[in-house]
Amino acid sequence: MFAQPDFWVAVAFVILMAVFAYFGIHRTVLTALDRRSERIRSELDDARRLKDEAAKLLAEYKARHARAEAEAQEIITAAKAEAERIADEARTKMEDFVTRRTKTAESKIALAEAQALADVRAAAADAAVTAASTILSQTARGPVADDLLARGIAEVKAKLN
Image (cartoon, rainbow, N blue to C red; front, side):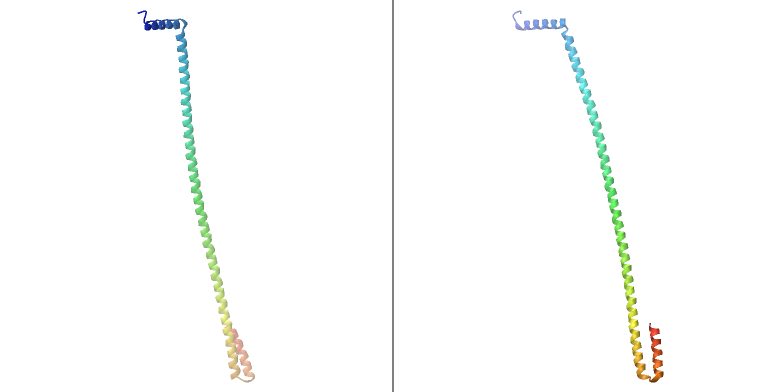
């Protein structure tokens, strides 16, 4: 039994444990383990706190992103509405312009027609006066004819113009 190495290992172990117990090594080891346990617990708490802060920041950035998306959509909608309004105004102005131009052209055409009609009437009156004077001068003779001719020409001019 004393010759076996397992026995001496066991004896050395018991002596070592007794020396550790005498000097209070077990308290020092337990204190070190407690401190390490507290440090690990503190690091875990910090990690949880950082995780919570990161989650809050992520939620805040997601909310900001959603607000920015909504604002961009509102801007796009407002821009489309403004573009449609401007297009409608331009269309209305163009229609008014065309209407005014058409009325102006119609007025000019009516004026030209009236002027042409007046010119035709004047030419017809001149032709009638010339024809009447030619006919009267060939058929009537003397001072009575001259007086009659002058009065007839004046009447025809007055009636035709």
